[in-house]
Length: 496
Image (cartoon, rainbow, N blue to C red; front, side):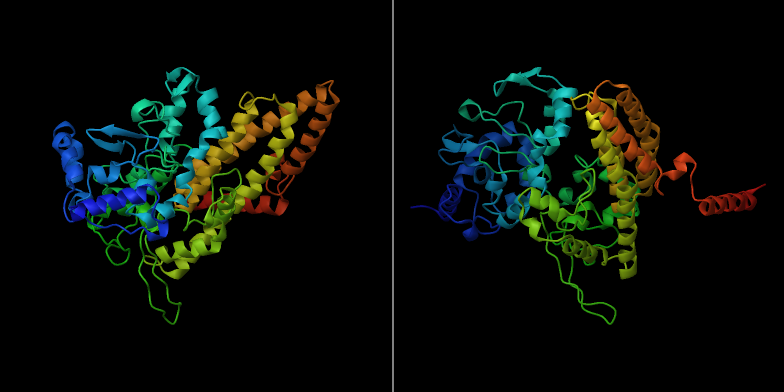
């Protein structure tokens, strides 16, 4: 006769095999006792992997009697399944596995940009790591032709790799270990829950900490962690982090804490409902979401920022049906728990204005100039000086400016952002364009002469525009006089 535990385990195996429709899958639940299969695992692993055993013992999984077998069990035919001590298991616990108990969270995650992180594998960024920085020196059974150690140890550890399964369920060392957020798993699912919920404690407190996001959201091209710690939000977090109840099961901003937000607060965590007042309509509660794009109103990744529904549509995500205004209101409903409405609305005026400035002055004309320069350059990407100038201008400096404004980090917005954009636009990009024009004009190739003429015409148009005419000493006389007046006023005020 089967015990209740055996029935539940059998039910899990049925779900794993696909016999139960996703709509029928339950949310997280508890077993009445630790299963005999998990007990068998623990006999060895509590001695051989003491750290793992202790982490699991402090987790909610332990308190729910969910153990090794419930997460690692596999069905016959699973590509990464293997027999171990009489049980069929798999090393990787994928989002599909987690969905057996956490179906809502897994579905939200699957619809997010996070789960698509490994799509960088064929992008320009990955070409840098594989070709420009790397070589094919890392040879493994899954990659007998070699792979780039720069990509394996760098790009893939944040974005995720496509895990390759070898004989007997072993995993190729070029693709495992890997907790990249968009990891492509042997079962076909995308993503890694353990990217944020580190095994085997799966601590909510850790997942709520800004440093948890900082593994990937840092560095010269997307320094969100550094921007956060510079901002008033990050300053408040460091001051009050011991008073934020981050280990609470229920963690609702404005109810359980209010001294500082973390990344999770703004992008994922629950908010309370607020009753209508004479000055504002009622504000509905928001549940926890694992789709981190549902509160973002600009996607600042490309050369020119786009609305998030545009990038969602490109990726085939359901978020294509959720417009940026809805997402912005979602974020405002977070902000309003600590700030008054005017403060929130005015912040977005400031943020949008910075995006407009970057677009109108640098990104739009810069991209047009770069495309017009292509016929005058060598055919290989990153074999030309202009390739590097333009790439860093938008990918590093332009992103820093936009992300800095989005998270209220003034130093990253200005000195690490718009200052660097402007410096390299005028001191590197414009001189290199002039050099290419000169070479093209001197060429005997009519096509290059024509390309040089088109580029020269566009460059002249850009530099003579109101945004750039100061560079040619053609600033509007009235503005020039006003600037001189202000300088004299400044000098008089602070003269000793």
